[in-house]
Image 1: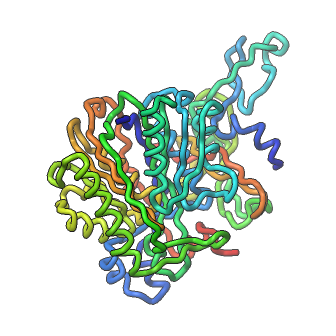
Image 2: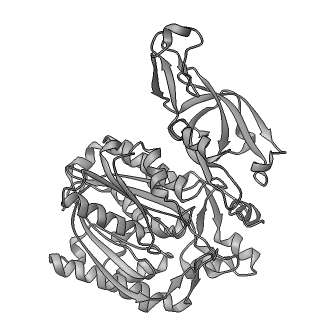
Image 3: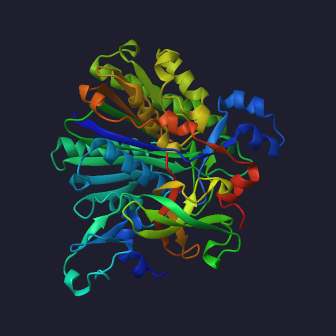
Length: 341
Length: 133
C-alpha cells in the first residue's frame, strides 16, 4: 500500500492538572487521576484552535518530508471542533502550507477518528494514482462542560501525516469496523457534547477497537507479538491499557504511544499523536498497529512497517514538545477556553 | 477588518510573503510595489520573498487596555521585531510569561488566530511570535 512520507505534531504549551480541576468541583484529585490514569491535560491558548494546531502540525510534516507542498493533491482535516460550522479548516491549512490551488480539500467529522478516516482516503487516492501526496490531519480543541466528567480529560493537540510513495513507513493494510452506536454526541449548535457514561465502554470503545484489531490481524495473518508498538485511541489512560491486555498485547508495546496520562484526550489527534510519538523512536523494520476509535461509532485499524528511510529524517520529538509546558490555574483555563461571556 | 482585505493579505499574513528589490536586494514587509531607495529602477523588479520567520525583539509593550476587538485577551505583548532579513514588523508574542520578554530575545513566527468579526463573523488568522527554541 502507500507510505507515510512525513508526520508532524503539535500540542499547546499550557497544562492544567487534574488535581486543580477536581479542587474546583470538590472531588479528590488523586482518586480522579488514578481512576482515569490521567494526571494533567493540554490547554489551548486563547488564540489556538483546530485550524492553528492543524497548520503547526502540517508545517512540521512538510518540513520533515522535504516535499514540495504544491505536490499535495488532497488535504483532509478530521476534527469535532472545527472553528467554523460552514467554511473548511482544510483550506486554511492548504493556504498556510502553500499547497493551493490545485488540490482537493475537505473537513471530516467522526468524533475521535476523523483523522484516521482522512488517512484512509489519502491512501486510496495515492493507490489509485489520483494524487502524488495526500495530507491527513487529526486535531481537536476538545469541548467539555464545566463540571462534567469529560472536563478532566478533554484536551487539545493534533497530528498531520503525508501519505505518498517512497516514504518512512509503509502502510501494509487498513480495515474499519463501524456500527450505529450512540455513546457520545454533540447536537448542532450545542457547545458541549453529551455521552452515555458507562455505555461509552464495552458496547462502544472496547467492541469497536477489539473487532477492528482482530479483523486486521486475521486479514494479514499477524498476532499481537508480531508488533513492536501498538497505539489505541486514548480517551483516558486506562482504556488503551485494558483493550491492549484484552487483545493480548503487553504494556511495553503501548507505552511509547501512550500520551493521554500527560496531555489528556486530544480526540481526533489522539491515535495519530500516539503514532507520531512511536515514529519518533521507531527503527527500520519495526512493526506498528494503530487502532483509532470514534464515537458514534467506528474504528480504523492500520498495520505499518517502518522503512530504512526513517533514519534519514529529523524526528519531530513529540515527547520533548510535551515536556515544554506551563501550568495554568482553573480561572486561567476558563479564560483561555472563552468560558467568560 | 473586512473579509476582502483579509483575503488579499492572506499570503503575507499566513506565510510572511514580502517583496525583495531586484535592484538593491532589500527585503520589504509588508510587500511594496516599488523600492523607496531604487524608485523607478525597481519598477517591475520587485519579487515575492518569503521571510524565514525568525527575528529579534527590538522593543515591546504590554497591552492592559486593549482595543474592542481584543477585549478579554489582555494582558498581552506586542513587539517590534527585526527579522533576520533586516525588515521590521509588529506582532504579538505568545506562549511566554510576559515577565520573560526582553529586548534582544530571539523569536520565531507561529500561526495563530488574530481576531474575529464578533461571534457571527469571519475569523482572521496570521502570524504571531513565540520564543525561539
